[in-house]
Length: 238
Image 1 (cartoon, rainbow, N blue to C red):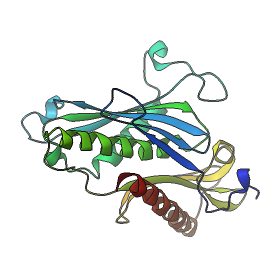
Image 2: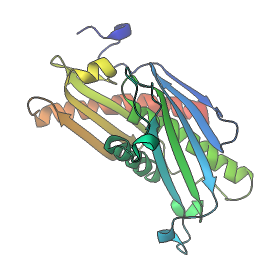
Image 3: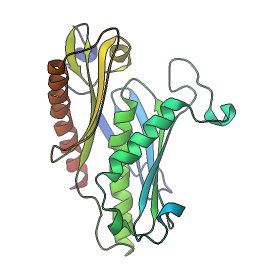
């Protein structure tokens, strides 16, 4: 199959990450992955949720939304609908779980870092791009806390990456854009650490089931892309 911009089957879209994009946030990025663009901010709050009070550990929580014209057609804002849609709720839980998996919450002490992901333009892969942009924003927020003397060391224990892989027109491809995702027979999202440990795998078939062999090949393909993503992260942060 011919991919947009003549990408190879195992080639991720061009990534551009602009740090400190929002003036007032302790950490922020403009995350661009192909034509997908997301503003990610990390805000420090000097308290924890009720269920963690006295536990001497911190928390990371995420929120995710799309501006009305991030897509081809206008979306209605959640504030107008009066509730968060199911997709957004599932994605923000995924972002929170992914980031908490690579943070020593005890070293964060009793404070919360709020991650806000606002999709300003969507062309597939928004949940995985949000995790990448949020990780950079989180790292910068933790660096801020250390520079202010509020924590002794950055509590991040590992790098983390996320990517989609799928089967489109019978072929396995990495990092699906919107057109590919809309026509995929299999769509998989994967979150993994630099150590190669899996945080989450979300795999869905459309039309007919896929084999275990296909699943294993897609995992290998996603792992290949995540290694490239983590190298980009390290080039920015180390």
